[in-house]
Image 1 (cartoon, rainbow, N blue to C red):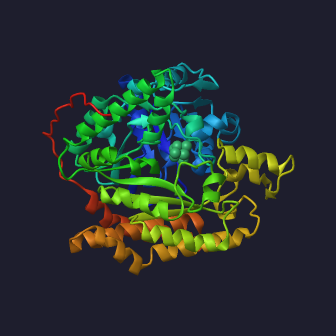
Image 2: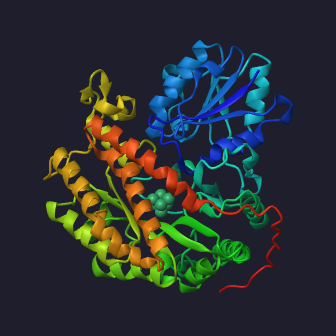
Image 3: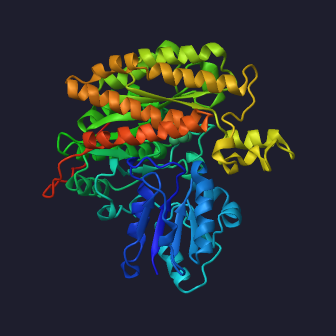
Length: 508
Ligand code: SF4
């Protein structure tokens, strides 16, 4: 009997940008007595079905974007006689779908680390339950990954999680509903221990795969301080203190370490936090800008963001403190107009962001937007073939619409076309070269250009283009560019690296 853990993907690039952390964490949760699990990441190469034998156990984790491919794998694995187990956000939201379309024997909801050995035990005994609930683990219970199983030279960034959950409630995001609004922080020494292990193996680029690295804002503290009962203020202060302790520990990593995270824009007013990030080698962050207009921010319940020129100033703050921003923008919001695209491009180009992504509003399950949109479609939603658009992830990739939410003034094709134009303009050679001034040496500038181009190929053309030939061409180009790119990210293994754990720190 073998255990296979499969990360599904309908497109393989040969090289992965970020390690799919769940594969390595679940591998760590497999009891040693079952042998070494076989890890398959289809963003590198497709699963070889011939490796799956009768009686094997196949664990597949899905999010909405790769659910359909996951179901193909599940069905094939069950036909080969394996036990098929689904987990991940999408399976948590739609367990019946995973059972019916993915041929799952069992579906695990919530955090998988602790319940996984129980699922394996039941499969071995021949009677797995149809459902398991992994619940929400506390930060101290999160497991580290089995990085000894990682293939050499296939990933650019390692991934380490420091906190799950996000206190915000953005309408297009499911994180706060699935991972919860209470930040669950992992113990500082566990995070550092895992990063040290990765540095020993030659990873110097570390993605902090967090929902929101900045779970307590200055405004949260001010509001809590206004209450007579100070217990909430004490809780928030404790969370913030732990963030600083973590960053103090990260600061002790070798100086060529580069960390990347996700953060809300409010961090821009917290210069103490930004300076701690700089010392902690956190040199990049995805910032959800979403919209450049106040109306757009209201559309997505993100009133805590700035718009217009105040937005440009806020984004510039990150760069001033040494944090390079990957700005994330959404197009197709109800308040968007044709001129919004140019306004957004202008903000992206003037605000010192190093990279940007421009996504089209898609109602994803688990979000408030989805619930509202699904209700609007009524009992007879439009269909593509036999599949209702309210189950858009089940529509084959080549037939899948790019825009689902009817817009008051623009057609779906206009939104798609204008979005593509913004990608093209932001990632034109001239624009990239101008932004490459963030680094000084010629070698670093060339690396910046290469990374910008590969990012565009991987995320724009394969996600927005309607023409499948263009998608395929982009995947091929990204594959070719990814090979030299991987060498830019490789670090020297540091097998003897040791790190002194941080002392507790005092912050305001
Ligand atoms: S989009 Fe970001 S800030 Fe908003 S709820 Fe999701 S994780 Fe939190």
